[in-house]
Image 1 (tube, rainbow, N blue to C red):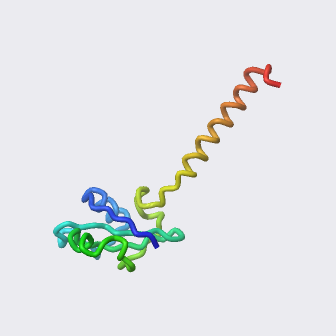
Image 2: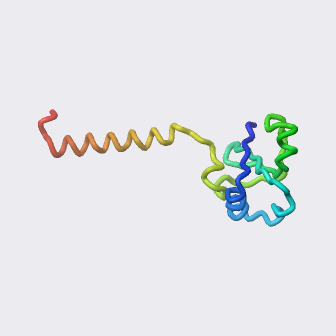
Image 3: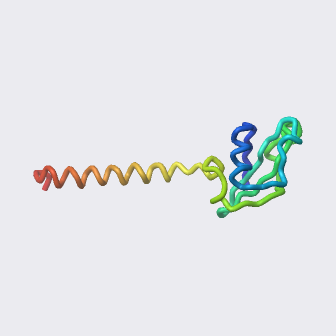
Length: 108
């Protein structure tokens, strides 16, 4: 699993609000870092101190403390698939071509 990290307090609070995990209190961390990975629609996550994560490195994270369905997580947690954006653009191009054919019947 490829873990990612987020240290922006605003995003961490957004994440905690959406997953409604009341076991976590980020006030107990000096510099909290959310570490997560997504696999088959499930988000596996933990919270680390920034200096501890820096010392051991994100590539050495091999476990998690909590699991949540990806549907209950913010959009930025999901995998960044560029293919999804390309599909939307392709649909728009096809729609433009269809409209052009109906408005300008010269394109036979």
